[in-house]
Length: 289
Image (tube, rainbow, N blue to C red):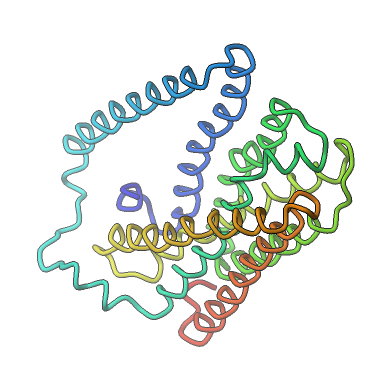
């Protein structure tokens, strides 16, 4: 989020989208590499050691970034005098609706991601390795599409509209997956994952600049941190609820039918809050429109 202090306001979407795309490169590498490593070694510990090594590299990169940032960017810092954590209580009401909006959206998305590999293996006949390749499809789309959608949104704006479209489209996509009959690696599941990636790209590019736009300068990092905290509450709850539903309904389609219904309910609730955000913003100056 530090980049927000050094980018013009009109390039916020592109800046955040480019950062998100770079993070997804790691997700793609993970889905491609780890199933291959396991099939070759049949040793989970080896995968954990790879993860530990990556974490160490991330720590080194963070230290290097901190050193470079302190040496080069000090002159651009926003004065922090007079700022207080109590300032979060002065955030506008639309901020809190945005936080719940993104929490509900990723409650559905991340709960699905947690079971996506086992779902496509059970319902569509994929192996562990081919399931990893399939799950890479939306991640690659996010890597490529995020900066493009971010650039587009920087030009035409309408953040609240694109967020609402992405949430409603994701709900419809989950319902499509729910109604898709079981089949062996059929084209329908590929269509789902392609739209899954496109809609995720749109939401990522459109949503996160909203936090910057509705909060005052100097409290942006606090606002992002608070949003992530609220989101994590939903991310913690979603897999627990979906896991319980799968266990209780395992006798019907492995429990995955009602799980995907649950995901559509989560994103449907997010769509409702997205509509509230749109109406609030439209009546209060169209900051996000």
